[in-house]
Image (cartoon, rainbow, N blue to C red; front, side):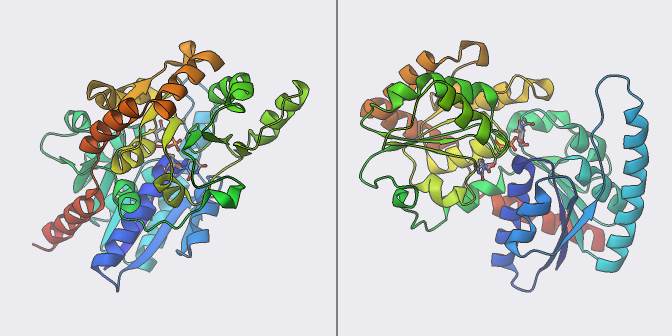
Length: 369
Ligand SMILES: CC(=O)N[C@H]1[C@@H](OP(=O)(O)OP(=O)(O)OC[C@H]2O[C@@H](n3ccc(=O)[nH]c3=O)[C@H](O)[C@@H]2O)O[C@H](CO)[C@@H](O)[C@@H]1O
């Protein structure tokens, strides 16, 4: 089987594609992959690091307001479709899979024009712009939230979950907190703001760090690669240093292994993070980003809140104090965290990769009929 994968711009689109690749390889050891990503997106470093063949396109996003830049966006898109057609002609895929982001728009659209089977995966509860654009021509659509089904052409979308859930649920982790200078016999709270970090979460953490320093549990603060220096500078200005139980890092490369050893999470409500949290049954405090299309993070978080599986703090309510209070309950009150962990696990879909693989096989088979 030959598969082109495309998804980009942000970790939440890229990691599901890579997790799917792992699942397909388990079913079909002869599979050949090609990943097509954007040259400016983080996929251009994340994907080659896995050893997967990678080709770059130049694309950019649409501005929501009227802007001359959108003319450039359209021109780049048309060029990217042309390059994609050549890539597809050379690679001869059986299927092209898109996991969101502008780059996937060009690659999957090119495949559709060439009558190659295409499958798109929607991670969020509100369909993204790229997937809406591609939906009509897609052979199959896999969604991670049931509420997303109705946003696609009738009968086309299937609930599959997010393949990253399967990856983290089955990982054998020998990760030790000692690699960060911490201890393995203490519960650890992991704080991160999605794949890029979130300024609001970083600010609340800076306000709370004096108190985190005094806690019996450990705290790992992931600032986001581009926000690390800023956080360190702010702490310096305030003359605050992290104590022995607190670590501040820009990014975590081996998140699945780390998550397995994590007692509780503070995070945005990105769809892929939620898939991981629910697959592993980790109690969480979610702070949905208010800056995303259709407020989709609040809707992503809703299914967990409804089930008593997570606590939500809205961004306007987020302060050092509200963060500390919620963190203390999760880390210090076992009855709360155990209950939440049990509820969270119920929502998880640890077979999501297999389910997505299955609709990919259907898409290929239907083409052959
Ligand atoms: C601002 C924005 O547009 N966010 C969107 C983006 O978020 P974002 O890229 O932040 O996506 P998610 O929160 O869904 O996923 C983040 C991924 O990055 C990983 N990770 C995170 C931090 C780290 O240090 N190392 C690491 O590997 C997480 O484990 C997870 O796999 O895509 C998601 C999936 O479509 C959407 O739901 C989000 O709304």
